[in-house]
Image (cartoon, rainbow, N blue to C red; front, side, top):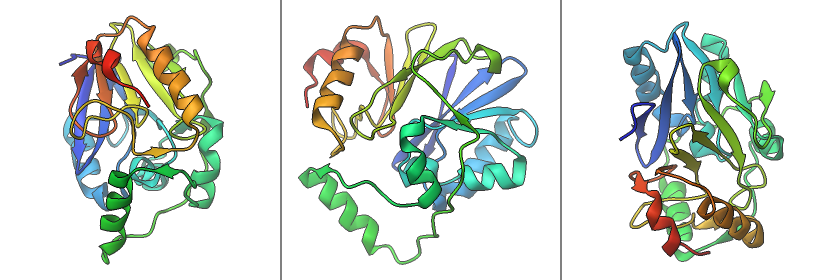
Length: 220
């Protein structure tokens, strides 16, 4: 496991905390109902109330943005994401996508829950672009644009070759792609891009980290 990346397990969703000099950068925020667990983890790490420099969102789905509004309102956190997914954050409207059998099952399970808190809409503070450095926030890493799962999906490439992939890659049963795909051709290009990079460990949005060598067996 990386010394630069600390996973925060929020049910079936992963958030990641990055050390950023004298503070922290958070990647993703889980579903709305995981707020208490997220807040507790950030306080325990020392990131809250005042040392959270930035929140980077890998894509706009509610299970990765569920804590954004509260982080903004309660702690003044700045939320950064790709502009392509801003409409989901600002309207709360999910994308229409190709969905696999597993994806349909997950959607059915989610709809069965009657105690789900409402998603709180928010406006991103910063829009990130491909290749953008995070050094100004204290992290030796850069943004990698990875559309396909959503129009604005992105990854965070650490200097040591670790990649936080969001839902471009998952590892729920084995390393693969997400069961929800907005554009299959774009996703294939993103996977091809990742395979061409000198990566070490993949930190997916769902499931455990896995070695980058396993990328060679992944297709869409």
